[in-house]
View (tube, rainbow, N blue to C red):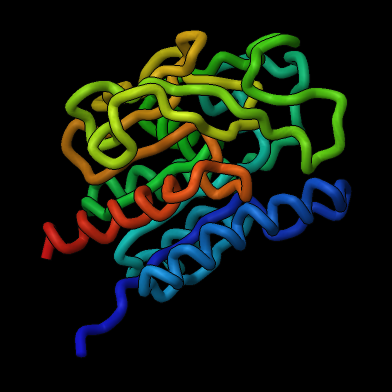
Length: 244
């Protein structure tokens, strides 16, 4: 019997004692990714990037694939931006540095990688891209002034014909769940935009050569359309099979 493929699920930090409600909700989202992956036959490990680049690269070196999940804003120093912007979250620069290095290593090694929300922004910044620091008060990508479990909102995205994303989710408008106040600005090297939101912002990117796909929304949310997360994780398995 062949050995189960290994998946490293990487988050910025495991503990958010300063904000218990946010911590609890993140646990639900990460738990959803882990549960779906295990149902597909993955052996899953969970890693916190705030232990630093060296530790994270060592812990994930043997993984067959990687998922980088959502979390705090990336520190602007990594993309040349200022601090003090609207709705700025706390920053975890050690975790940022570790995840940026993980993306670069995955591309070098051709390790399949899925980025979710912050994970997409990490991918973009790792490859020299920049971010729109705040989308405004009425951006339609996050609910403001509500309890944490209600911050996610539903909107449509439009996959690009012929993209891997369109192959997975279809090329018509796709309903998604999101809670982000930042977005891709300048696009990182060798990335291709493969979905836009209803208002024109980048919602998915793929790498021109490496098996990398990242989405700005949360397919792991309990209210996400059925099958989205399964399709995206299944694509990682398919890329492993092709490589083998």
